[in-house]
Length: 339
Ligand code: MN
Image (cartoon, rainbow, N blue to C red):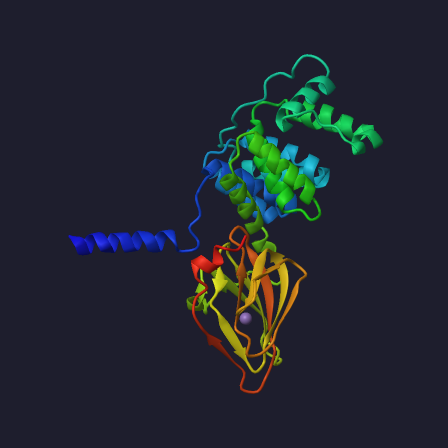
């Protein structure tokens, strides 16, 4: 009896501290909307098609996707919005128009779009939106208020929380829009999204980058036993004496402490957010474009942040009799201290 209890306790502990267990805050429909929005923003029609099929199979109404993809033009431009809507139309036709359409929006509110759009924007954000930029270029303020928050946000067949969820996913995959992403995370939270949900939306959005990785995603890492969590390996070149691999880590995944004997290693970060740490030193946060020179005989680890997929190219510096020595795991205690 005692033995059985102990075993169950142990199993539960292992499950909860496994590294990849993440609270599932979003439901299947919300996950689909985040995935669809992110693929649309990337302009990846192949990924979008698969995500739409999965969503429609999960009974997300056609009109919900249609609304999100119309709204996407405000964040990604007309070309990506039009291409995404065209993919949706094609998918719905190929499925024999059998999917549930869902609700249409009710009639437009009475009055001027600028008036009710300004009210919507104030409600969404929690206070009136003003600023020097809008004094400098009043036309953009008017378009935001009358058109985006008036015409589009007045369409009530998708609620504001869902619209913000989609917006966060779209902005999360775009470069150079950090301040807009932060603003929409705040607006999303003001409209009912939790911190866990925001983290999950960003992770889903991040993941949509894996099928358009510059050097490919590859297969599950054959050296997986030296890693905590799942990683994927794509050999780039192995034949000319300078082996290079594309390594992709799922959120929370990292390799064990290890040493590259004789040759060392160079990491070229291409996607996501991660870490490199040398024994006895603080961990270094990594972003695309960062280069890490790992000298031979240096004990270290590398891997993803908790909430981000992460990809780097690993260049194995050639050396006579070079080898890798794999050591202890990076404990959850150590790893969880990182942001
Ligand atoms: Mn290494």
